[in-house]
Length: 131
Image (cartoon, rainbow, N blue to C red; front, side, top):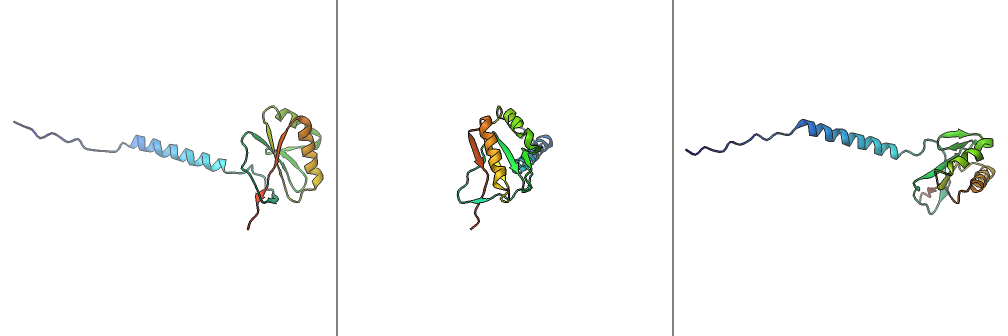
């Protein structure tokens, strides 16, 4: 007369589980790439007070040999002003990463050229003093 209700077997679907695992994997890969610092080895000078990196900023690196890099691209000094002028339309802030052994004349050259093309917000990258 009365039948016992049939219980459904509980199971975990593999398709949603695989989808979530792939999404997590993609997230981890992307997060690991954001942590990388521009790829050029530069020994930054130390400073007592530092700030975080500003988004939408142009990174210029000066190696201890005096080579100029705009992001990761090597730029010749004679072309630097022209290339910097083109980049001014895309970026509002310039971050200068200079090796601590770089002669001051290279830093002054970059700051002068950046000022001439219209960068008003220029920061010099440093690292925190280790105590």
